[in-house]
Image 1 (spheres, helix red, strand yellow):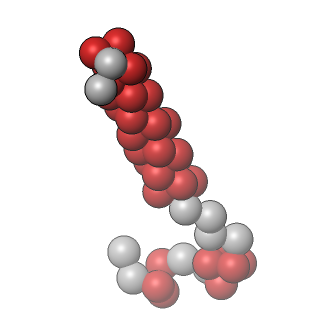
Image 2: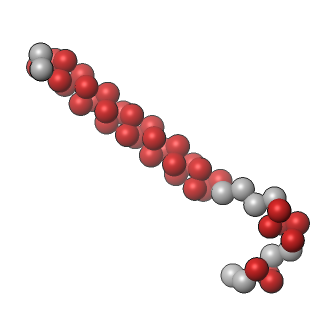
Length: 46
């Protein structure tokens, strides 16, 4: 898609919803993995 296909108003209001959603889901996933490993280490007494 060229920039000519998008009106200047749509370019001004562009918000990367998909990228931000992906980033937030990635952060949630990594946090869950971290806590999972953290509690395994506590359980084993490491």
